[in-house]
Image (cartoon, rainbow, N blue to C red):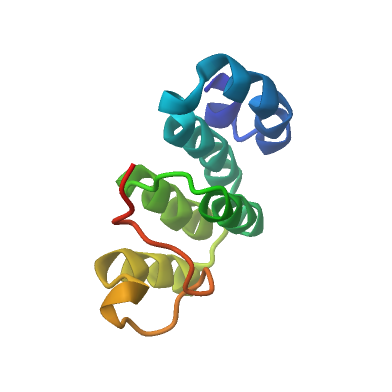
Length: 113
């Protein structure tokens, strides 16, 4: 979490495999969100989007912190329209017939654990 707080996305990603093995299944959302936090603090919107897509592809449960970090990453990158799209996606998930989704329509914040 120290690396994430500093915005060291590369370092957080490097430690991810070891941490994932040590923490086990119950902490996966927390762990994935921690790397997402590193991207957010660094203002790395593209890296955050890429990491988020990995979360979706791996079936990781999404939560409000997941989406908050996506908004933060876009805002810190100065990409305010992208931040607004992330906010709209949370308010109106694609399954509810919202307008376009920044993640290609593959996200769902209402996924069950």
